Image 1 (cartoon, rainbow, N blue to C red):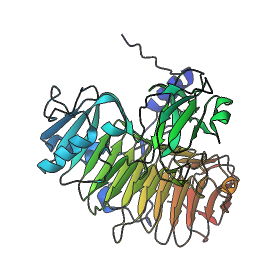
Image 2: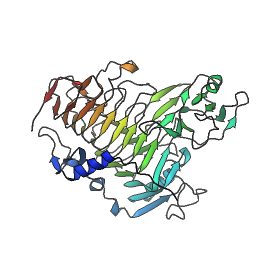
Image 3: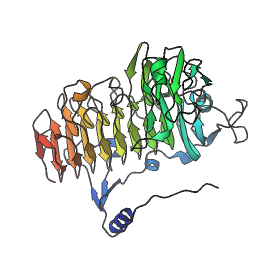
Image 4: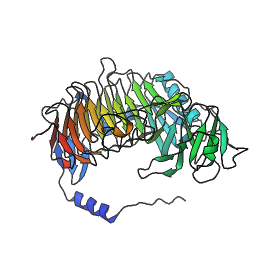
Length: 459
């Protein structure tokens, strides 16, 4: 029997009781903000010191009408199932998606909680998936962990007895999922320059792009529980003008980013209680390349509720246009930490960033510690309304050799605009930045950072 421990402090209980005794306050967008049509009824909600939104994931995509079902079970011994029942479940997530594509029917893909490594992952075919109908990917009976990591067969090195080796090319990173940092992210193994150096440094790895050498943090042999090599391989690359609903999935790594959405125009993509972490491409022989946790290009609306985009080599959540399509975004109670910090491949890495005249709403989120402006938005006509958002713990990308010195909230490179209500900047010399006077506006703002060209506004 599994015992679940709820680590709830007395202070949290007091806060919950306090909030229960406070009235719900609702705030619509500022009058001069271009509210996206798909969320025209949007309201930010405040109860005590908590923030929420009047729109729920099910308000955006109603999956109850999807009558076609596919089942996926990581424990299936082979790929002989057709996915039509749990007893005949598919073994690989990507195969179930291809079954949905072949059917052309709106399909709920129910995935048994567990770990789906590269050959059981969404991107197991190695190619983008072009959708023909709406789909869901839903975790059932536990979280689903999937991505571009491999489970390898290890042997002890003949020269260095604390080093283990496996045949593996195109290694971008190595994670130890048995150890977490203060944000709950997997600790990385440190890349070193030789097998000898690996032998002298517990928690390190070396690769010559043919063989991978690992010396674990705990001084034990590598296993599927303490060593996940992240490879240059596709994770989730979904294309087409179809609705997509994601629930309870942890996306790990990806040479295209953890999740890439493209080639849509009016569709909705909704992620609920998902994480997007450790995206990276390249290898140590040819050079590493930075990637976003979520790269959103062509779609009508991208919405993330209670999601996490952390420890990616570029941005956590990145919204761009694709030709003439400008995705709107709704981010609610999500977070992103330390993007761009570990490898420092790119400059100006953000937690949440919107470009190219796209419009976004951010409610109750937290963006901290990334190598750049944690909530940073650029280009003409880009607009962001942030309500109850915290950002900072960074002074930009100076440590990565860049020139951006504002680490919390910022808009620049054209006529981009941001409205900040009940927001907080933490641990940044510059809390609010705009390169044009009045393009950053704030109301009831908290924080110790300076405000550059920001203008206070009232309702």
